[in-house]
Length: 134
Image (tube, rainbow, N blue to C red):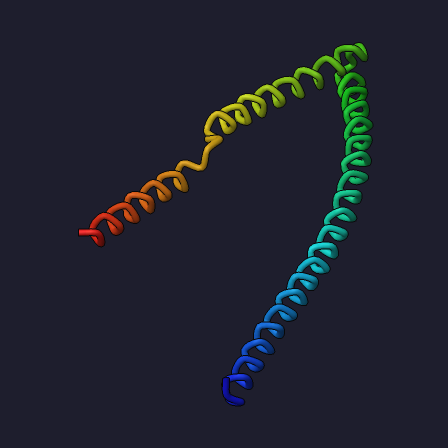
């Protein structure tokens, strides 16, 4: 083995080592970025949860206010105001439930386009491998 061959081997070995180091550093960087993103997502989820709770309380209080205001405005008994508001909410909830169920029925649990594409790829590969043999 000549000196030139050993220097080429050393150079290749050094390049492989550098590539491995670079890959490790890229993986470590990706991990850190993911940790930061998860931390941000967690903080956002906490804020959204608190906001949902506060908005729910506000919605309940506004519903009580609306029910009492309707009863007072039309000089109805209190139960009639609550009944009317409850009926409106029930109708809105029923419509949203119907629309949501309709959307859920459209969901396909299997990614059909991907499955079809994969089948086409398999067929193409089979055709290529069988035509290469002949």
